[in-house]
Image (cartoon, rainbow over all chains, first blue to last red; front, side):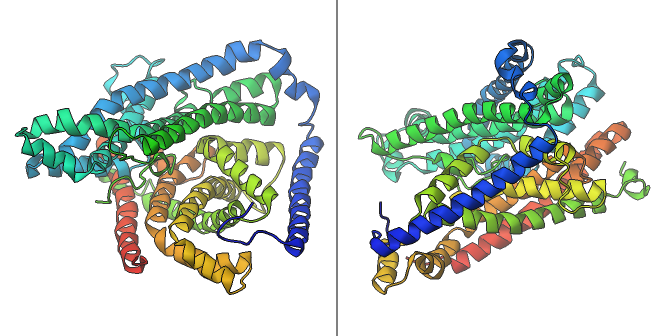
Length: 297
Length: 224
């Protein structure tokens, strides 16, 4: 165990590290004890608040699993619609014609600057006004619309960064064998950019899944987040429910994040291809990912 | 069409002021917390490293909505933690800031950690050769250079934070998104006008931040 920041510990440093370990463990233990004590005072540690998640299968079949289903459904629909839309916007932003490039750039920057929650609330109000969507489908529509508007513009930036990350030689070679611009884009650049973008796209899916929780909290979308109210109404176990729901989110998102970094590692190591890669981390920076893929406007 | 602005019924500027306050308090807090986390993640003490890694992986994969609602329902309503706030408004604001710091700190930590990687190995090696200990190497040599390299990524985190403050609306903090929701319900005939006003507000908040800090990032970047 050594890093560039510190020497391999000698006898003195080892003792010191043990002391730090002890102090840190005591501080963390005190914080934990304070929380647990507080929970015990409010009877939050009672077995009947936590056991239902193990003993009562209904809690899973009526609430948690359908909720997770809705969350995944909204996330996947949003991804499937946002992907081609984002690709079009991203390619459009690289166009040689200013009358294509400038308006598309404005649209992309506009939707990236607005919080996704606002887009969701606005879409919901819009569907109420239009009256074309039945009221039980409206939350799903509003959530998906908000997510698509926002994420299409983020994906546009990922696509642009992916195409720009390819070595110049690819463009030069395509031009040298006499391809037209469209051919160059669709036969040479896009297919290679897709692999370079994969980690970033998977990370964006994590962002989308996290953002669906906004719909559950504000628009009455029956997703995993909203189940918190329903379950704690039945079992009056707010904290236990929150913890279980958080664990489900973490498990799903952690798996996706792990997949993203696995893809990234493989792309970096692979001998085939250009070795170009758009990092997952960059796009993932927030619940609302305006992160630095590509350059700022 | 825009008479909802002059009717005096809604305090649009006040709502955006709350958004700005949320952003500033959370930004300072998450910068401090994120730096501490980054320090833990690169420290020679294994238990700190694992705590840092575990914290970042857990919190980063939790929806911010869940964190903030958890602060409100869990910490405040169940465990009666008020963070020293007197009334509903103050408590809600502080809980939202707490949730935002807990969440944004992980992104600051990751940005800093990648910044630490941009500092050439020789810098830390030279510092160690001079006999500096880990804390000195980190605070005197590595972090000052790392901060200069991560201003651009941190700007993105700040812009994301500005937008994420809207999540505080889920626990009833009277910021921009909550007011917009109320106005959209009352002023259904001016739907697009209301949205345009709030969208413009956020563009005005995020665009100058990005431009200004982008310029700063270029100025202070270490030329290598």
